Length: 411
Image 1 (tube, rainbow, N blue to C red):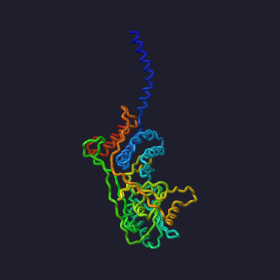
Image 2 (cartoon, one colour):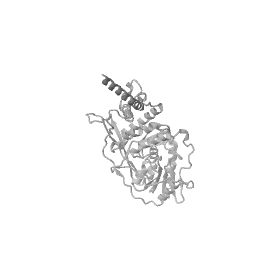
Image 3 (spheres, one colour):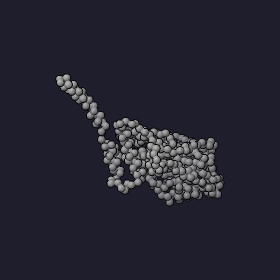
Image 4 (cartoon, rainbow, N blue to C red):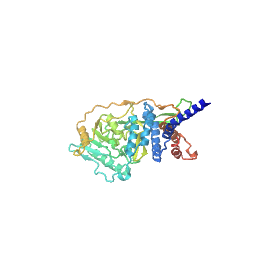
């Protein structure tokens, strides 16, 4: 009896030594999320789901998107300010290796310009027409004003078709697009400007996007729900009687919006794309803006180019670094003009468009007790799938977003 009592005492003493460690581990696992972190997670959940189910790369590339989210979530939660928060999101997006999906700062309406350059066009001494089409000349919130400006450009092109030695379109933007702008692509198309630039019939690439017929199951089961690609047809541009004007150079930067005729002209070998830094593909592909809070927006690619020859993608013919010399007024424009005067470029080679579409399910650990980031990711999935695939929200007793916010700390 004495031995048994002694053993029990020693066992209790030993357990009491480990009890602080257990308490510490439990408290570390149960650290409460504050309201600021919860709002971040709600925004990031929307970002995760949009990329997961609508970014085209995830349908044909082996991208470990779920793993990237799990490894980045601690940085997202612990980010001390807006800049570090945006930096953590940029590190997350880097796994996509896609310049068409990127982070920008939100654009307050009161910072948009109200004074626009007059006139829209200018000429060099050797008869090269320079046409800036960006926030310095166009207000994309006012399509009447944009049509008027594009008509001025069209008139200048048509009246000088026999004399112009080439055209530089300056599409660079310092701020990016305002919220809900009129698409510059559509405005250029209906203004008649693109027909004036075409000497022969040109083909604009189509777009390929992911679509979902219900929510396709991860496991192979007998169901009518499926995911697939949706392809819009290529568009034909017919020339008008303006004449043969070339070459063309389109000068862009990360935030610039490039009309698709630029790609058609490049494919035809009579235009070049010059990028000041890396180009995101704005205007050529569809993107979906997601406000992630703290004055930042993520633009998520939701389509990829689909040419009639089965190729995709786009590349700048020339990429240059923006000059930091304050005395250099515009070195990038000088490079574009130099290219017009000496237009001799090899034809670009485009990559093949992958043929199939599958959902890439990135299975994580099968631990009995998943890590905190993995539990958060599970919550993301439950919330996003029901929010965007469940058709009966009107029958729910409570707002689903509110339920998500309230459930995150417990999960």
